Image (cartoon, rainbow, N blue to C red; front, top):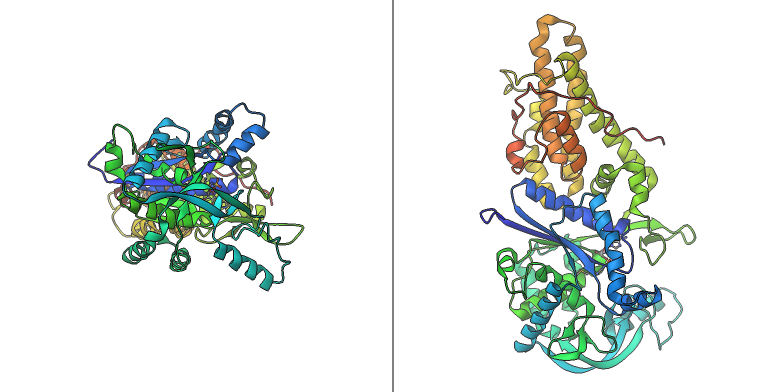
Length: 537
Ligand code: MSP
């Protein structure tokens, strides 16, 4: 661990164990992975966290339904599905937290004690609405507003005994039980002040506005314990109660750093997180409840919550566009897409073709289109042509860096300034624009080859210097593009570097690596097989 480098701490949500990961959950994980790789390439000391959310009534029920002796056995049986997929998708997480791990349980219990000591929790009777599938509580007003909106839209009135969930439209239950409450209502103004002082806390802007209006609508105290089942973290001072699954889950972001353990040095060094990447369905938890809990415990708040939209699919029967999810039965398994595109192109497609703040429809046709245009015809083709010509004209090697390499060429011009634009786009999770920045280099290189026709230069011994300059220019552009593509397509970039006899691992100083002139030349190069074989339509 290099203490002299800035810490960059990034997380994904921890995923529910009840469903295997699908394209939607993988989307969120790949998005965070690209950012983690980019930050490492810029020299940061990255901690990238993902994991599994294992407590709660639904998990206990699923364990029983699936014939497992204990909920823990059920969770253990699901772990490989996540770990294996993340490995396949080249997810570079530094840690994998499970909420049943002792380190997490200890941290949650410490946190609850802190809240009690600071006077932010109290015991009372809960009587209100609860959405079991979403594990979310709703106030009378929220439920009434939703019902009014439904009826105004011409929908049939819901059963008053089971009004519908404002988030997912499934029937709610009336819950009456003794519960511990968190004084969320005390944080309405502190939260509004915080959002104002930190305009970048919630991104994109539309999500920020959504949270602002929710908080301005008034916050009620939150029930944070359950006593009718026991699959959860017991309250250390009231063992009959287990922590509400969301409070338990949110704390993973600090327990993974050792909060509540004997050694909190990593927590002290890395907290607050630079960014939590989350989907739009869980922003209230991350942008309202989580910051309020941290304020109550006297801890600093994360720097940013980046909120992405959903991958959607069209329901053939109703014609409606729906969120892709396991419970709706419309989820595509990542393996299906990997079979078609391969892992790196899979990553590239979801990262470059989807705008990460809004919902995005997924289609097989579009996947093929992007793959063929960007990867097979542009990037893959450039690498093949260039390495082929270099090997052919320079005896299996790259030409030496020519004396005049600093002179202006169209390719040098195309590479200059790209790092700055790319880095800005990457930092803002605008991966579409960052990929377009790199594609600018790739297209300029393909055009440069056409315009300078190395095959013609090779026929004229008097123009050998010119030929060396052209090929060196193209290889230099490829070297830079491979570094910039590395966060998106790590295996392909590593393979490009291997074929060019360059460093096996990506750079740790991306800015310097993108400076023109880095390629010494003279080293062996290998054409190799097509990086992206063309797909038939
Ligand atoms: N366990 C909670 C998170 C706790 S974090 C302290 C949870 N788990 S989840 O498995 O249901 O969802 C995890 C993430 O996957 C969410 O950010 C959610 O938005 C994302 N996605 C689930 N389906 C998705 C799509 N169809 N598209 C994009 N992201 C999706 O919520």
